[in-house]
Structures are given as structure tokens and as C-alpha cells.
Image 1 (tube, one colour):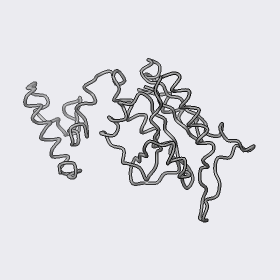
Image 2 (image 1 turned 60 degrees about the horizontal axis):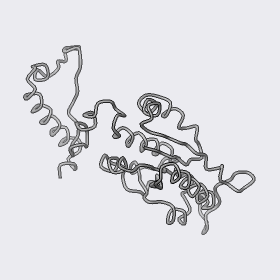
Image 3 (image 1 turned 45 degrees about the vertical axis):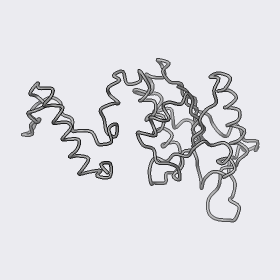
Image 4 (image 1 turned 45 degrees about the horizontal axis):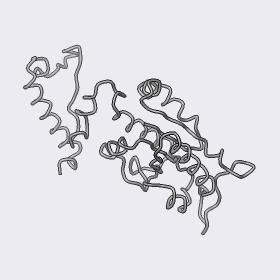
Length: 229
């Protein structure tokens, strides 16, 4: 799967793409991630990509010209290489909330182009024409779309075959079955007077499965009862 990320701050992605699971997935050829500096497509001699909002008000708005130029060129590149256009996502606090279900849907796309918004927002004309959907990581406003874009890349990539190594890792976790995941324990069995539940060290797999199911239900009821509605 290919990810293209359009951003004003490409170096912010060096860390997440250069470590851990995403790094291994890139090196193994399971995913391809290309990070692009939007300023490259600015016709302004100072490489500006923003301007004051019509109607007045605070802040700046991302101009449509560099966005159109960037997305149209990247679509041509991707279509040539992958024979199918990218699905364009604007990360925005006004979008659909990013959930495990949304991540699974996006994981079925062969190519994703993520646009990182900034300032007061993006010129609506660019959104209307270029963007297939807007996605939010939650009811919070951040300084830019880079961190949400990282979350999208990570959340989607880990669902792809081979990325986690063990395919069952994505099947028995929070939200995969509409509830939160059960608690986990490891060695030692006793630590500072706290003991691992006896069922988990019983060796009885059916008892363990029942314990985990009950524990997952209880945790969901306590922390996220909305998931059980």
C-alpha cells in the first residue's frame, strides 16, 4: 500500500517512519510512504502557501493554488505507477472521527493521499474539488494535521497483511469486536503482593477465553458503555 503525505513540515515524519514497526514495514516493501513539502508547489517567490481569510478574522488560510498543483501532480504520478488514483483524505477536526472501522475501510484502499491542514484551515474550493473525505482523530484542535496524519498512517498500516507479523494481533484487541480489550499480564506471577488472576495461569484455554470475554465486557461497561449500545 502507498501513502503520500502532503505537509508543510515533512521532517516531522522522520521519527515515526524511521523507527519500530513502520520502519520494518517500509524496509520489507509492505508499505510505501512518500512525504511531500507543499511549499514545492508554491508559485510565490517566498514559497508562501497561505493568505488572509476573506471576510476578515484571525489567522491565515491555506491557498488553493499550491494544493491543486500538488494533488494533481501526485495523482498523475500515482496513477502512472499504481494504475489507480489515490483516495484523498484531509485530516481535519471537522471530519468523520477516526475509528478502527474507518481504519479498516481505508486499509482496503491501494493508495492514500493525506493532506495536513494548517493555520485557520484550507480554502473550501480545494476541499470541494480535491478531497474525497475529511477525517478527525477526535474532538480536539491541534496546531496542524501532521500528528493526526501520523496516526492515520500507523492505524491503517498495522492492519495490512504482514505488517505486525502475527495476523491475530489485530483481531483480538480494543474495538475489533465492538468492545475494549481485556487486561494483560506477564511474568512474574506475583509482584509486590499483586497476583496474576489464577485462571490465566491454569493452562485451561476455555477458562482463559471465558475470563477474557467477561473482563473485556466489564472494562467496556465501566469505561465506554456507549460501545455496548
